[in-house]
Every structure is written in C-alpha cells, then in structure tokens.
Image (cartoon, rainbow over the protein chains, first blue to last red):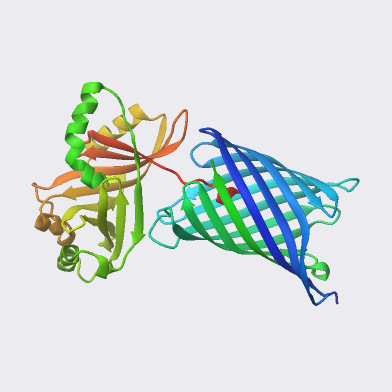
Length: 207
Length: 195
C-alpha cells in the first residue's frame, strides 16, 4: 500500500490593496513557500526555498457585499515559470459579532508545454473578534477558513484545506495574521494522498 | 456615542433644517470587554437593582465624545444595552427590536426619510433608546413600563447601496419618526477574507 506523503514548512505572504475608486481596488501580493520537513524521506531538513507567487488582481464591488475579482499569478519554482489566471466571486456577510466570507473561484494554471489545470474552489471563512463584539484597532481576532478545491487535469481530484489563524488588527489599514494552513491533496486517490502543514504569516495592508 | 450626542441633537436638527444640507459624520467607536470590577460603582448598583440575576457582559467604549461603560444583557427575549458615563451615571437604555414593532406611523415616516436619502437601503438593526431618570429607565427593564417623561429615540443601522459607494449608516430618529442625525459607519476591509 502506498504511503501518504507529508510536507511541512512556512508560507510568508504580503497582500497590498490600493483603492482606485469607491467600488474598485487593485490587489498585489507576494507569497513564498519554504519547506522544512518531508516524509517519507523522514528527515528534518534545513529550511529550503520552494517557490514564490507574484499576484495582481483587479476587484470590483457589486451591491453592498459582493465583489468580483480577476487576477493573474506568476509563479517561480526552481527556475521554471508557472502562470495562473483566476476569477473569484466573494460575498461577505456581516453579523453582530462575526463576519463570514464565501469565496467562489475558478483558476487556470499552465506552464511551458504542460496541459492546463483547471480548479473550481469554494472557501468558507469565519472571522470573530477575541475581545468585544467587533474588531477594533489593536485587537486580536480569530479566523478559520475551510476550502475545497476540485482539480480537473488528466485525472481529477479534490484538495481540502483548513486554515485557522489568529489575527491582529494594528489599525484600519493593517492586519497581521499568524496560523496554520493544512492541506489534504489527492483526497480521492488514497495511493498518492499528500498531507501538508504550513505555518503561515500574512500581512494585509490597504491604502 | 450617539447617546452623548443627543444633548446636541436638537440644535443640530435645527441647523440641518435651516441650511437644508444633508450631513453625515463618521462614527468612531472602539469597544472592548472589561471586567465588572473595572466598572464605576453607580453602574454596578443600577444593574444589580434592575437586572439582577441576569448574565451581564461589560464593555468600555471610547469615541469622539469620551469614555462610557456599557452593560449588555438579555431579558424576556430582548437584547438590552445600558450605557453609563465615566462616573457611573446612566445615559440611556437601548432595546433591540424588529422594525415591525415600531408604531405604524413612525415606520412610515422613517421609510419616507430613508427613501429620500438613499438609492437602495436595508435596515439591519433597530434599537429603541430610552433616556431619563434612573428609576424611570430602570422600570423599562424591570416591568417594561414606559413612563411618559422618558425621552425616546430610534437608532437604526442602515445598509445603503448608493450610486457612488455602498455603506452602512447609523441613523437616529426621534419619537415622532423625524430624522435627528446620520453617521457613516466605517467598514473594515475584506481583503483578509477574499485573498
């Protein structure tokens, strides 16, 4: 029986949002991946750089709480370049003491001569203040995300992600989030199932 | 914040009428949980007299108009919020209700005003505000009895989809359903939920 693989490491990320008009924004992002541990090699390795994603997205607000985002990501991985286009629709629900975000996304990834990979994604995120009923400056909050990615390439499979983080709102423009990003990929193919556990640190800055 | 602002509301409304201009300030309010031992004695005394036996959550609120203490509780299926100044004197009592619970004439007046100001709107929260002497406010909690000396206001949170920018507003009406004040509620960015 094939053994599931396991990877662990770090995901540092910066996300910059620039307001272009009351309804439109430009979002740029950089996210890297560093691996620290792998199985079945069973070795604790030195932290090794894996890849960096450079993203650019345009966002437009529709109605009170819906946004449509279209973006492009350029990935550098071991000297190879990967391209991704993505389209997202987001809805954020505001409650008295929490916010819930729904993200529906479709992305197309290709590299060199390889076939294009299509993914359909849904992510549910809950954000809750840890002090009081709303998140103010200099306060902590909890954010938990759960995402399902349907992957359509030669075989097709499902990836499931669980992302619990603790966030700190420095001010209205800046948030820092630290947590975990657990990914279970090839869910429908136990022979090649891969578990990934990433420690994430993200800075969200809005101008 | 709007509770302290009520002292200035009537002259403010007159100014609105005279100038004919619509004016919306930005609401700034920072709220944090606080332990009961940090709360002024007068506030604790009021709660113990009129809401004893209820689970109380205490908050300290800072705004442009200063620091206040707020006790939040649930009673008879309604959520109440009791606000006190920094020395523990009662400022007001707020009761969260459905819009349909307001008097029909008041509902009509409010809807007319909102329709005139916003392209599209949705009322997401309604609170009845009671202001007056401590014992008269306390009677609302204890027995629901509304003394006629109590000042009554209606505070609404309204989500409005305006041509330029969809936003949330805190809108204050008097007992007759006439507009007293509008505050823009700053929205937190959603980038950490979208990306």
